Amino acid sequence: MSDIELKGKVRSAIGKGLFALRTSGKIPAVIYGPGVDSVPIELDAKTASQTLNGLTGSTLVKLSIDQKSYSVLLRDIQRDSIRRTILHADFYAVPTDRVIRVRVPLHFTGVSAAVRDFSGILVPVLNDLEVECLPKDLVSGISVELAPLEKIGDSITIKDITLPGGIRVLMGTDETVVTVTAQMAEEEVVAPVVAAVPGEVEVIEKGKKLEEGEEEAAPAAPVKDAKESKEPKK
Image 1: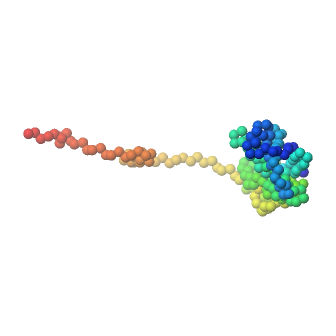
Image 2: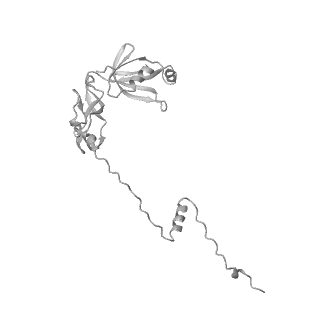
Image 3: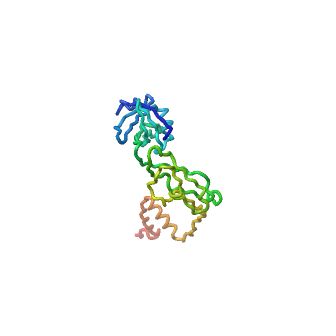
């Protein structure tokens, strides 16, 4: 069970009253779950923010509301788009006597020899696992040791991970969790130089102007020869 605790109280403010509630230093929230009617609550903004900002969706929290206590999971947080302050939180009250399904984040630990000695690139494929367990067996994270990745191309699958007791993975055990790939060779690409053929320069410039939206100028009228323009003497 988690040692994380939060305290709050049932709130009466709803709708437009939430603005005044937030201004007074409170965070509106709600608790819901099997056998629990939706309960609107309020939390101290400073204390709750410090706790919730580092919380994962698989961390069990003891939430005390007035004289009643709930074992809850954080299900959703709404934040201000600019200041990133918490505007609202949803808590799911878990039943203590039945298994629950959650996604538990993976924590990569240790050093891969393929990365250290062969300049490999570590490529995480999964960031969490979907599992089921009793609330008492729930963990906030699962460790993945990277030491088995000794050479380029090595991978770790779900079946290679040591799971905490009481947890069952609901995914294919052959799924890759993390792998090591080789670095891409850096190649300098030089654009070929194409010599302009005489007579084509004018065509290229003309096409560029037309592509940019300029209208093609009408051809100039031919200038008559000075001798031809003279009127015949009378």
